[in-house]
Length: 224
Image 1 (cartoon, rainbow, N blue to C red):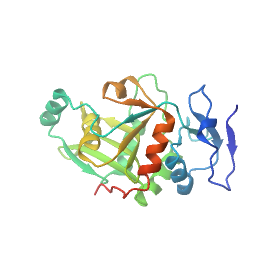
Image 2: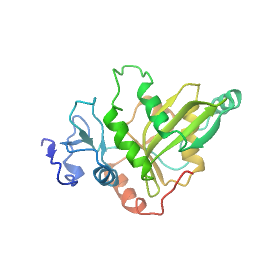
Image 3: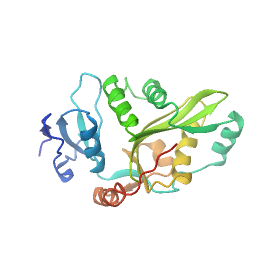
Image 4: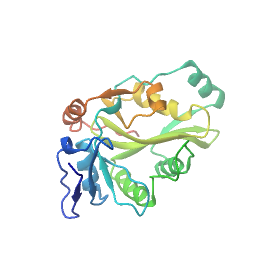
């Protein structure tokens, strides 16, 4: 089984059970990042992830799925101490583009370059303008020092990326989404050791998709 190639005319995707196993979850290639296609993708548990501005768009639906159920992000004493020491304050949707740019600029071990290309920046800025992409920001002394951004449909927060310029800043933002908002699930997409240490869980693809069916049409949450 090989990934299908999308046309630019339709926003339809192949069934997610056609995603290949190696690499895990690659479903299809091509298409575009217009809002209608992105919303269709997220509602089905599909997301774009590709190397750079000139690469073809790759669409993914991994199995199992890395998620945070409500109130599952670990809130450690060290994170609380960091928040007090640095004087963290939370805002949302006041600096969406800046959060995206900071996520693109942050250096991560073993990562060369960034997948948050100008094409991705433009596409998600349009989603933000339509109320479908949001940022949770951590500020200290008037400076943006951490944050998380993602797509929000109904009661699902599809996390895209996060960054920290001060210790534990992104953890604090993630914990706020998990414990203080009313989202039914926080999608983390693909696991890594850092996410697992914060309390992420693995859900089978079918369970995740059933939650999307139930929650994407629920009354939406606007962080404002």
